Image (cartoon, rainbow, N blue to C red):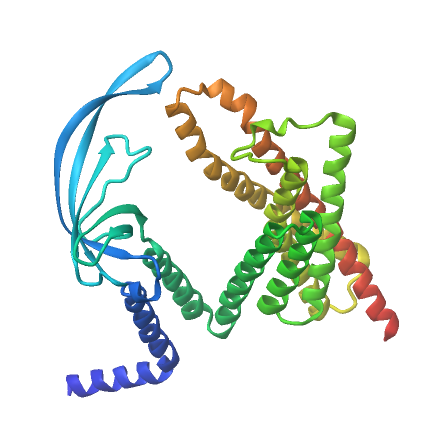
Length: 379
C-alpha cells in the first residue's frame, strides 16, 4: 500500500514537472557533450593521463618592495593523450615548470584537458602546452544558471535566459564591429539601445511598464553621461595613462565613457522597472489617485531602492578591482601608488553609476506621471 501511494505521488509529480524533467535531461546531455567535444576543435587537444612532480630549483622572487623571497620551482612530467586530429589516440610526454606562486605558470592535474602545439610527423612528434581547456566548466555554470532560472520562474525564466543569450551575442557583435574600425561612440549607443529594449521587452513583456522603463532609462543615461562630460570639461581631465592594458593609438576617454555607460545600465534599468511597475499597480488598484500621491509613493519607493542599489554598484566595482590590487601589490607596487593611479577610475565609475541610480528615480516618476496623465486625458 505504501509503495502504491508513493508510486502515485511520483506519477503526479512527473505530470506536473514533465517539461522541467526533460529540460534537466537535456542539460545533462549538453554538459556531457561539452566535456567530450574535442572533435569540434581544429587545434589539437590532449588529456593529462599521468603526472609526476619533482622539485627542480629555487628562484628569487621579487614579490615585495625591498624584499627578495626564495620561490621553489617544480618540474612536472605529463603524459598526455591526444583527443583529436591527426595524432588522435597517441600519447606524448611533455615537461613543464611552475613556480610556487603560480603567477605566470600553471600547475596541471590529472584529467585536465589542454591545448597542444604539436610538431613533427605522425611517428615522431613532440608537443608543448598552450593553455588549459576550460569551456566545459563555463558551460556547466551556464547550464546550472539556466536550469535554476527556468525551474524557479517557468516560461518567464526562459525569456530571462533568452535575453541574457541575446545580449551576449549583441555585445560580441559590437566588439567585432569595433575591431573592424567602426566608431565606438555609435556602437556604444546602439548597444545601450538593444540591451535596454531586448531585456525589458523579453523580461517584462511589451506593455506600458516596459515602455515607461525604456524611456526613463534612455533619458537617465543621457543626462548621466552629460553630467560626466561637463565635469570633465570644467573640472579637469582624467589621466588615462594609468588604465590597464593600454596599447596603440586609442581614444582612451571615449573607451572610458563607453565602459561607464554600459556598466551602470543594469542598475538604472532595475530602478526604472521597479518604480514604473509599482506606480502602474497603484493606478490599476486606485484609478482616482492624484499626481501628488503618485509622486510621494514613487519617492518613498525610490528611497528604499537607492541605498541597496548604490551598495550593489559599490561591491561590484570593489570585487572587480580587488584581484588587480593584490596582483600589483605582489609585483612591488605600493598600495598608495595603486590608490593614486588606479582607484580614481573605479571611484569615477561608482560615482557616475550612483548618479545614474539617483537620477533614474525622479526621471521614472516624471515619465510615469506624464504617461498616466496622457492616458487619462484620452479617456
